Length: 465
Ligand SMILES: C[S@@+](CC[C@H](N)C(=O)[O-])C[C@H]1O[C@@H](n2cnc3c(N)ncnc32)[C@H](O)[C@@H]1O
Image 1 (cartoon, rainbow, N blue to C red):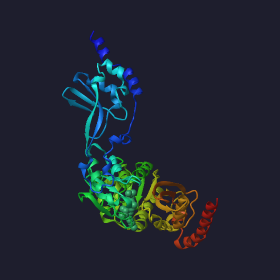
Image 2 (cartoon, rainbow, N blue to C red; image 1 turned 90 degrees about the horizontal axis):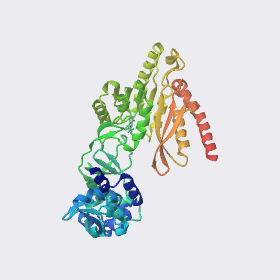
Image 3 (cartoon, protein in one colour; image 1 turned 120 degrees about the vertical axis):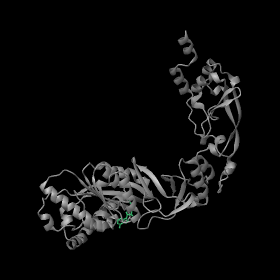
Image 4 (cartoon, rainbow, N blue to C red; image 1 turned 30 degrees about the horizontal axis):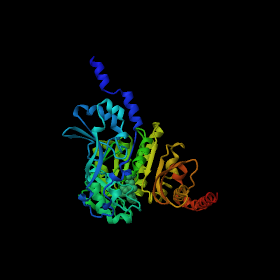
């Protein structure tokens, strides 16, 4: 008997699914003029939260407390959903269910038969006034209503711990204060909003920041690919858009592999690699980066796997990398090993200019005692390329700086990201060869001139095709 009563009063799942399919209206609130912030906020440059207040007529069902759990599944897809607004509210007569004004124009818009089975009739339905405020809209909705309608809005920003980092176009600069306040109000855990003040052209590649809202507190704690990092964002380089690229490289590495990270920053390649039990030599010229690199290695408990240096990348290649690699090759001559060796060079504005440091890194005599098929490192050098055919240009850049045409040793040219119109960032991966590592610079320079002619000719051919 009890089971029967339950069955007759609670709609079956299959029936509910059929009903909800029939009434499956997905409306974005921004498609409904009534649900937008008042039109008067357009063009506001100082944030006046009170000016967002408005009153609108909203359809609703009023049902007794005892019915509400059975009625909600029937109108679930039709509920009014806005920030800080619960669509089911207590009223004197029981509960009131707020419905979306685009999907529910009148009683006939509702699943009337199913509602009638729950003793809900047209008498339970009405339109009544609802007050909306600044808190009911998301940052995106607020900014879309305020910023110029006919120009590009705020398309993207980066989050680094509690900091929001903007790169505002000129036409949005008059709104920067307002944008900052809206983001700080609306984004969870956001305490500081900064705008990129100029292009990154300083040595240490850290962004020049302009504080537009919140605390001038730049020491952040963030996670990349599950690994915690801490640093002072105003003094070091950190770009969350590179997290996938960092992950790609770290995935190439196996425990026991070797990584030489020439421009290591605060460790987004080196620390995960060391955590993976690779042997890492990490270097950065910026003393503040170097301090945070050490901090991050310690914090991630991988100090035994990593040696850190604070010097120019060229010196690092000519000294630490050179010595460590030679020792590994010598050790491998007596005890065979099966690990791979990688060199990361992520300083895209100029890393290619350091490639000539590999030319003649060893004398032929030094390597003569070692087997021909040494474990040669794979270089992953990052570079920007600007122009029409950026992929061809980036190859040309690497080859001309290396003074050698890349043939079978080229492992890939991967697009990393678009930086600006016609400006792309690439990773060029290739294997160092004995010839490159032992050819004296003089000889290479002479041959490079000849090869440069070949490269230019090849590029011209590609352009003509
Ligand atoms: C684009 S950042 C890359 C940092 C990190 N590898 C990453 O992927 O996020 C380049 C780094 O190179 C460092 N740097 C700039 N010039 C350098 C040089 N001549 N030698 C060594 N490091 C340098 C900067 O301090 C900065 O941390």
